[in-house]
Image (cartoon, rainbow, N blue to C red; front, side, top):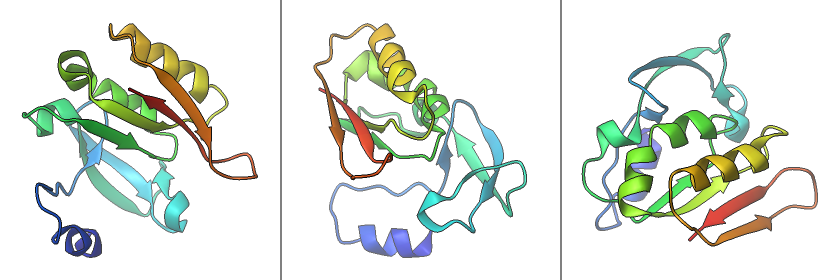
Length: 134
């Protein structure tokens, strides 16, 4: 986290929160031994604090980007207030679970906006699909 905070220091209008996103306040076990594929895991070696975006950030947001290694749906649920109220642009990874494309699309659309939806696949392999809502 310290390295991430340092990388963001040079940018204006960036506020750093050292907390994971979910649908409620609490803690989760986190497997940090897998590098960029690290994810929530009951057998995880670290415990992290989590909370809903709606509880942590009170001002409007213009963009929400998530690549949470399969934890996108709980995090989106925790951001539903922001999505309903201010309709931020969204860039949500949709490849960690087989149902992600369908579930993420249906959930965001259920929040009442008529987003224009785009899908971009970034790799030659099976991973790397991102749903964009604008």
